[in-house]
Amino acid sequence: MKVAEALASDLLSWYGKRKRSLPWRETRDPYQIWVSEIMLQQTRVETVIPYFERFMEKFPTLHHLAAAEEAEVLKAWEGLGYYSRARNLHQAVKEVEERYGGVVPDEEEELTRLPGIGPYTSGAILSIAYGKKIPAIDGNVLRVASRLFAITEDVGRGSTRRKIKELLLTIIPEEAPDQFNQALMEIGALVCLPKAPTCEECPVRHYCEGKKKGIESSLPRRKKVEKVKVEQRLTLLLYSPKGVLMRKRKESLLHGMWEFPNWLLKKGENPLPFLEKELSLLGIPLHEIPRPMGEVHHVFSHMIWQLSVFLLMLEEGDVAREDKLGDYCWVSKERYHELPVPIPFQRVYQLNDR
Ligand code: SF4
Image (tube, rainbow, N blue to C red; front, top):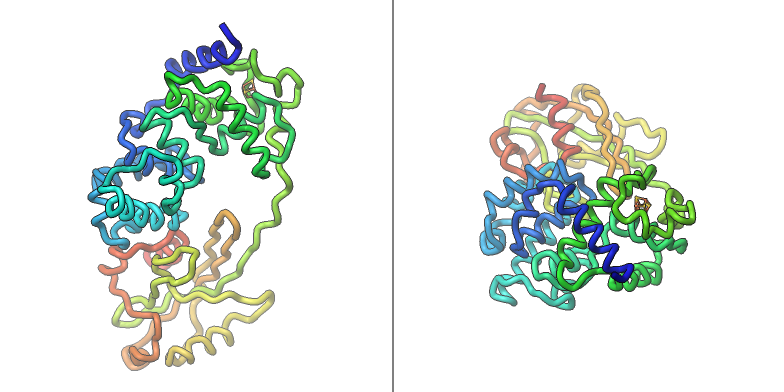
């Protein structure tokens, strides 16, 4: 038996015994595989499972999702974060409905033209749903492959990724590319861990060049990333007899989700004069000092928000004219629970809802 065949055989037999039972592994429906892969980006498997199950109950087929309103989709995604994933998925599904009659394409070129589908997701759909011999290289597979082949170049570079893809193509078996790709992901999740790979339990340890050279823990190598930006944001829970003041975001971050008024504060800036000025722009007088409610800390992939939350209750006579409020509107308690609200602002709301 050749080395590649022996490796695949050892890997697949380990996967048959050790694989976790996950809802998206019970199907070869390309729509379900697609949704699961999008949800799993940057998100832990345990977190995704209940979201995936609820999503499939609400939108059991591609046609159901294509026909849904964006707000319904964002609501179903609420709490999972990285909402551009949901918006892209919804947009892409609508395109599949219109352009391909609701059938998920089985060609890489067509798939990667859809919003939110890159080489990894396309590889996962093509290999798992359509049985095509194409690698699916997510973070886990990148780590396993860079160790298995002892790749010492920066894995952030396109040339290194192409090299890894070519090497994987030499070991993926024709007859089970779906199982093989998922087995590599599973090794990355359970055995070939980022800091401490448990090589003694690994089914491919006899083939692992990184292990043989004793460099496995230093792989994969990548250039240092820049420091994450921290934003200090003054955030206001402003209540009137009509509800709480909110707006639908137009910015690309959390686009389409609902937020409370919040402003970027400069370092050392005094929040109260700043708040007074911003409220006067909305036609709201500041008769009393807003009550500090606490801090909400939220980590995005590229940025951290530090939200300093203040509470202010307006009387009927202090409520600004609607035309002065611009994008903002008063939201009742019932409506708040129907709107898609991202986690940091849900936590802001809870500061006054205990
Ligand atoms: S032998 Fe160790 S380093 Fe190599 S793939 Fe297995 S767990 Fe990873």
